[in-house]
Length: 423
Image (cartoon, rainbow, N blue to C red; front, side, top):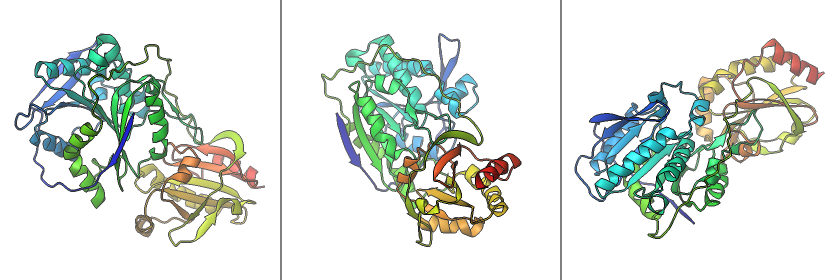
């Protein structure tokens, strides 16, 4: 079952907040998980306990303000940072590698606490931590057999979930981790319309529903991933962030579980380790580059197929991505190294407005066309999973090499590869 809704609005007041206490939960592995507790400003019996699994942003001011808003509305709030608890380096692969044991322990403790108080609880996650929340929820369900499969769990809320394994190299289609289709939960996905994985959401929903998860969808107009944590949000992102605590009640009502609904996760799960991506410029399976037509900031249309006869460096980037910006000077130097009739750089900006890009170009020199992929469809065609991502396309329009990170493009090895292709 699926429910869809969208929202936009304004809320204004914030207050400061600090955890009143913390407690540790011991795991069978020997690790401990620290839970930071932020009690409600006043008791509200009908408000569920919120259990938020963070990704290194717990101390940031926008998140503290968000907790304060929840407390002022009567919500008790738990915050958990698993990597910090385990003293593990904060990397994407380390997040993807978490087995969910810590989540399961927190959920069981939250279940016991909520049940004692005659309340429910709501686990919340963002980004890659959503994968770990699914793993832990399944372990908790299988180990504790709560009533109807969820007991006092009211609903899971996940913001812009990233539950895909990273592709080994740019251009490979990302694959869902097996736990997604093994999950059976009431879940609300809150997805910004300008988010990186917007076009992947139907695949996530289909996988969740394959094991009878109940999925509700919330759309955040004109906002990007992490919109409620950004240091320089747009006005619309700021409004949407300020509105989250009030909207949570709407989301929970929209995804309300019928009394006799039972959730049963898949017991046998295929093992899958997180893929380690290949760094640098790597050779890929030769295939025709998908064609597209996009316009630049001046409104000039550029068609990729019309570039045939030249070797093309096709670069996907965004101005909010520091590594993307860092590699631009080396790309400028690379463009100067070859005949413009034989080699060209074409960049595709991800979902930023012409005004934003124009302002950026006033402060950073870019010596090649910047095309605007306003809805992200071209990036989705090329299976862009991370920024920057780039492809080398030969004169016949075949993709030959890719790179899924920033590099120094005028390094001798890169220039040698391009020189052979251009001859």
